[in-house]
Image 1 (cartoon, one colour):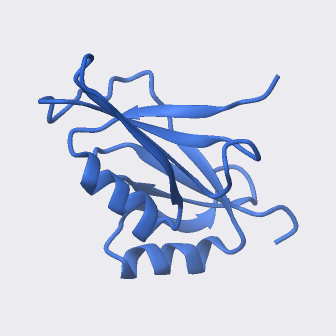
Image 2: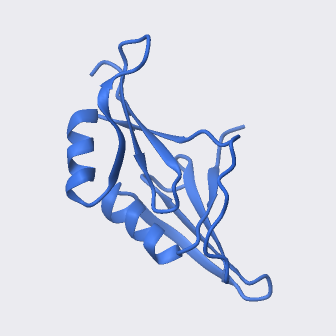
Length: 129
């Protein structure tokens, strides 16, 4: 068994694709419209989904916003250097929720950024860095 993807609903698919590709550096792997169901799926990742998990963005046609709920936590992405990743994300217009620094009660360097729909994304320093 393996994790295939994490699905996030988006109210503006093009805006979200730009964020994940231009701000976080993922690649759009595939995109499919489902006219009978009135939704579009877009899969993005750092590697092909055969080689690692991806983000599935679901756009339900005509729905612009969602209540994120209080059960959702975050998506985590490993980066080589959290400090430089935050600076690059900030430069590309990304919103930093928590600047890079040691986690609470630990030494691992983390940060949090927010995608255009309000989903938090944790950046975690690569092991050994």
